[in-house]
Length: 170
Length: 170
Image 1: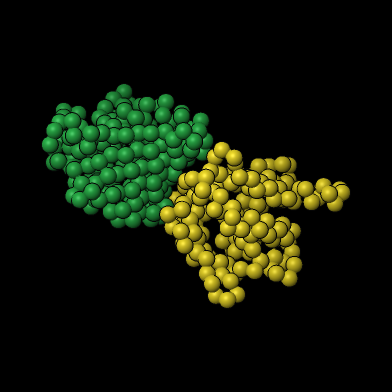
Image 2: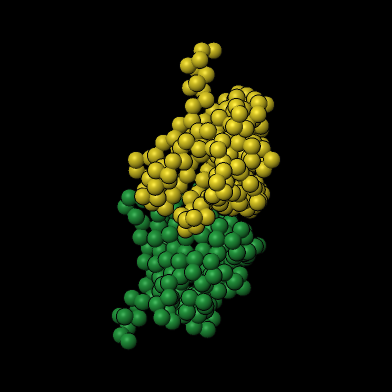
């Protein structure tokens, strides 16, 4: 397998729809849907990869089942904290997660996130669609710099799935 | 107060946004935000007004609090049932409800509904925004005939708030 091919396979694609208030995030992982789904739903695994490396993640709740709730905090070295929370509308094992998402600093800006796990034959394509209340809210989310954190989180998830350490020494 | 004015005050406005996949529903009620909010959150009241008169409503769960779930069934006289479910992302007393919504017959068509209660000085304006995943899904919801049921539900809520019976004899 060429390096170029490897890179493309592990590339996070983030697209803002020109007409809809959505962000579409697509990424492939070298693991089965079962393993990737578990990394998205087991809090002991989520805490190891979600978000950029420089932030420390603390999970208050992560009930990844239909009707469950979640809340977590990302913390900077200087102590600054960013809290996020939401509810799981549906968690369909190895297939699909539908959840709400809001940042504590802007609790009325609620988005609806749908994540689909697609079996590529031992590998998995994960597609997350974030639906927001307006094009402005969506553009503001893009401008917040979320893209770097999403990409870095996916790299950490690659490392976790490969059994490598996911800390900031990688 | 003229009849025309009374009618306008009790008119349900339903608008499909030309650019966004949303339905905006606006209605005023002759009661305080506290009373209207209670009618939207207390299952013993909800069951008396939500939906068209011809259907019988049965509530399996209605935990109107942040992180709570709900499920209810509307039944035709011939026994046909329509089930609906979702989760409450946030319930902010007398002010705001954010919840997911899905029809059992199309569980992947999840919408995000935000209901705001606005104090008009003893009266209340209720605005519900339904956000869907695509313009097509939104148009399909409009075509389903939901508008008649919404309007009739609001008339039943008028009757409930006025202390009149809300059954099909009204």
